[in-house]
Length: 158
Image 1 (cartoon, helix red, strand yellow):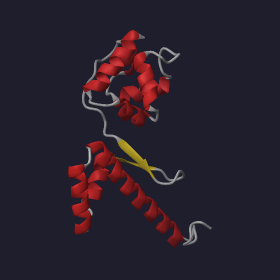
Image 2: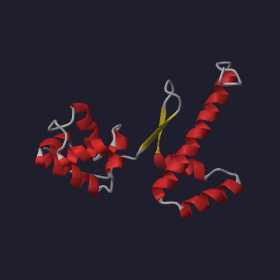
Image 3: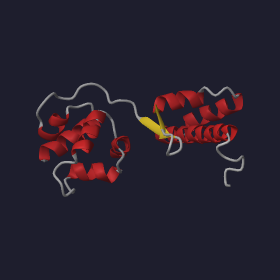
Image 4: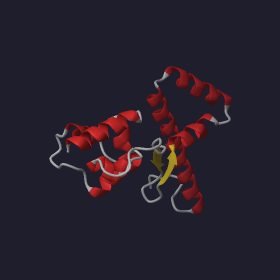
């Protein structure tokens, strides 16, 4: 287990991922990753599915991550996917695609605001802000589409 904890932490740090970043990518909390790395979790290894999600996001062979066997690490991590949309119609896009979409918005006033935020905010806060804007737009568009199709009334509270 010591080897697993060490390999997990070293590879995560090599890729510049925080425990929060990796946890978000695999659908867990940052405390889950911290517990795996520190050994405070009761089990020696995560479940098969979780181990494979971690390995995929760290671009390593799951056997290498768990036991030190198999192919060593290669390549950069896959892009972070941001999920959005209602629970019955989820979509996912790479974070950079969402940032590019929002920053390309044609309104000059909004362009100036995005440039100001980009200059003033830490990158992680700026990314969260743009994801929030995008998901709000996506939800508004989905509501509009459903209203046109007659699936919901214009007053969506009814």
